Length: 197
Image (cartoon, rainbow, N blue to C red; front, side, top):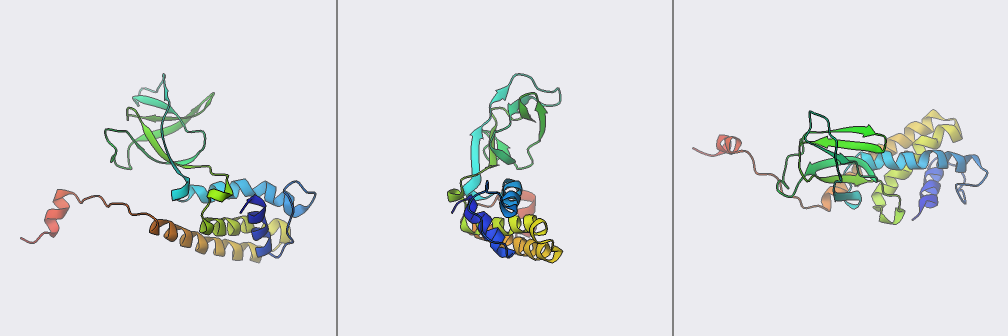
């Protein structure tokens, strides 16, 4: 599977002829070139896909604002951050406080976590790494994005968007089935409430 095949899946879904490349002189190729990368990042960002999850120790910066103890460079290939933790607190809660800002060199992450490790969704462009159901959902998202430009039909846009939402949920469910994550033990006060006296 490659980018052109995904684009052709999207075009076929709205009744448009296939393309040979994104640089050819055709309206479908120009529409796919305009919307493909945006659609891919949108679908990636919506959910922590197993195949696009990365972990990296963040590069510390020397300057930080007074309300945070540390500043780190935002990962270059990051679509969205899922969790910040460190080796000592590897089970730190997902609500660890951090803030994203920017400087002259790009995005910066501010937090109070020393030696921060970041778990994030990477901007995966290699289609061979993508799950088949993700590709299915992405093709419908792209179809929805290009449908009005290529067909002038709001009905085609609506149909493609509905298909995208349905197949996105299917892809999420499949992704969940591939994981066996342990659930956190309930708080002692919560356990006591449900224990027999």
